[in-house]
Length: 158
Image (cartoon, rainbow, N blue to C red; front, side, top):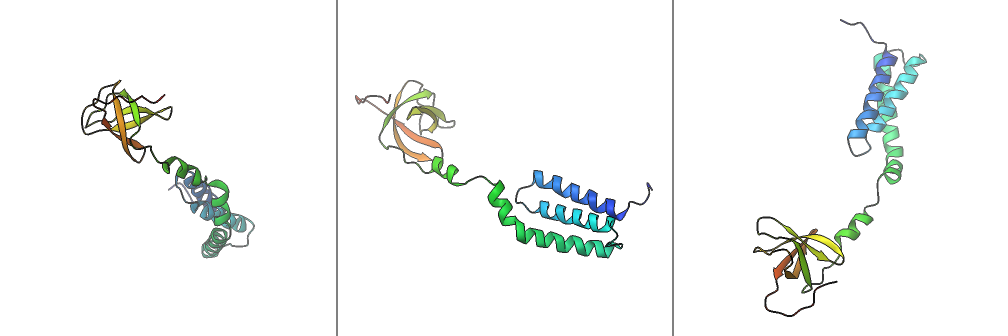
């Protein structure tokens, strides 16, 4: 056996481990338990909690108090704004708009089309070759659903 570890060192290492764990897990929960363990390490080091059960009590109370008092603040401060993601997903395509295929589209594999100055993934029920003109039918998440334009004289999108 390597030897016994001091209670203060145990709580300090536990706190550091939990703080590192917060980096790889989402949710802003482990950080408060890590801070609680560091509080228990400090009280143990100062001799205020000489027994393990006393340190465990301090760890539990400090973790819960920190969790309930600071979690909302931490989430608002450190998490990104969800509104920005909504802007990308909440747009309407111009159904019927004629666009150009920039990469072959196959039924089993999406291709790409140029729409509103940007290339977008596109799917179709049949193979459509690069350079062809297609009509926008709808949007499926970030993929456009298209159909070929046949025997129509439409101007392509600029």
